[in-house]
Image 1 (cartoon, helix red, strand yellow):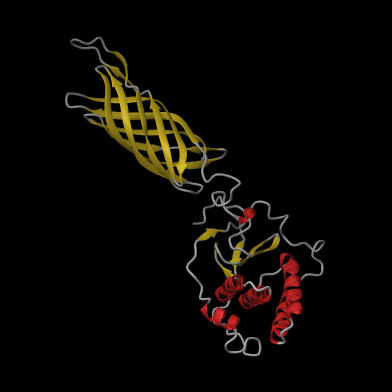
Image 2 (cartoon, rainbow, N blue to C red):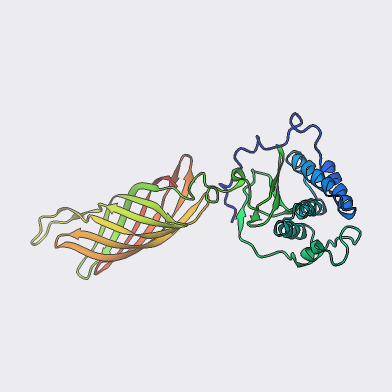
Length: 333
């Protein structure tokens, strides 16, 4: 799920800098966690709320990767805060996130005694199998979610996302799950579609193996792929293959065309190099009029500077087999 075009955009503005975050460190977040645990054991809700607020302010400015136990403690801090705010469902989600970060942790009895509703919630907050979205990393960088190096983040529960690169460390607390829009792949964020239309212009050569004679055709071809849903695209192909007929008995020779139109569906993969394949309805026009047939096609679009090299292979049936190979340049996608 991590194609090469998942390049991080806008990270420089999100990275903690000494000018904006001079006083915020990882230790400050850890101190807030310790303070909240003591306050919870002492039943002092205002201290818990204050510790949670300090952690929220400090987290975006943490300029170092947080360890799993630090992330787990941070998640529990926000669970304590949600509990004193009388939001037990939200507290359960924070506790689930804490157990993802630190699976072996057990809350001390000095913080939560036996029978306490939040301890029961912690025991029941086993990590769930949730839908996930990819987080894109900068070149040479790494993504850490809830203290662990992964490339995706869960939806529906809180997460702590960190991106470590040569520019520094981005730290983002996601109370409702998912990842910040500027860290999502294009297809996951609402800012741009997963795919864009592709137009390829080139030439193709075809061999028509009829019963009485085989002919080779060559000519220009235009192909368009338009996104429909997910990886599924509509395909339209217009070709004008030509051949030269020799003069003979009953024939004056000359140039013959075999205009064709193909319409169908193809699937396109994601990535820098994009393989695709699909099937079409084929209509071609020969000397006797329109002929209906079917075709299957496969190809690959390969980056070549600002454009893409677009070779393809097509196999058709129009009463006789028709096999073609094409190459062109593609734009868009």
